Length: 252
Image (cartoon, rainbow, N blue to C red; front, side):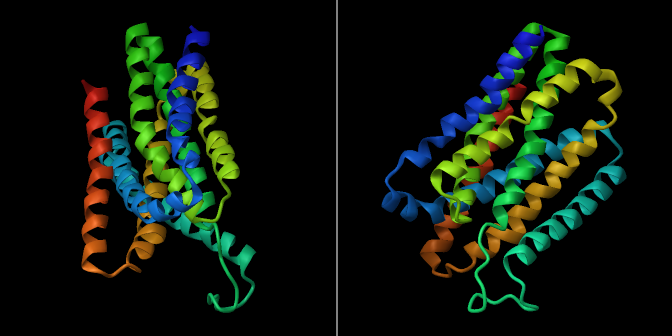
């Protein structure tokens, strides 16, 4: 059973990253022109994953007030984490673009948030397999399905943060491997870990909301033309919709 849990975790988590990595194979000129569009899509997938997947699941497992407090604390923690990353790159008291350049501050956040999400996915797949083998396979397929659009967005964020294509793939793959310790811990300590799951989910919600609203939306607001705004709304809606569809498939 442990072999099948790990096998389907790799297929669901790492397979999703590999499938989404096709964006890295595009020519650099084409990738640069698509990047603003992908960032809009990424914003939608982050918000969709947070509000349509992780948050409802967390609220089903813990008291709403406890979940809300965890999300608030998580947002503050990610604010401090991002501040530390900025301080590392810029030592001026007020960091202006003409004084120093700050690149990659969204990159570490998306990797940490993604690792938390993958960890929970591994836990969920292990729990499903321990309930029944068909349920475990269904859970792994659902993870694979909803990871593809989300990972496409993650790659867009990493590229926009200044990561070279190889590093973007490597770090995203490393983040996805967090699904394995999640599965192992779920397999070994499923009953003992049940109480912790909703709070790990809530921290993932906090990371996705913070990245979308603090890092991506301000970048989208730099493009003020009406045509750009139409495309942004359309692609954000597409990102939310793709997450919603894959969650419905998973529920089905």
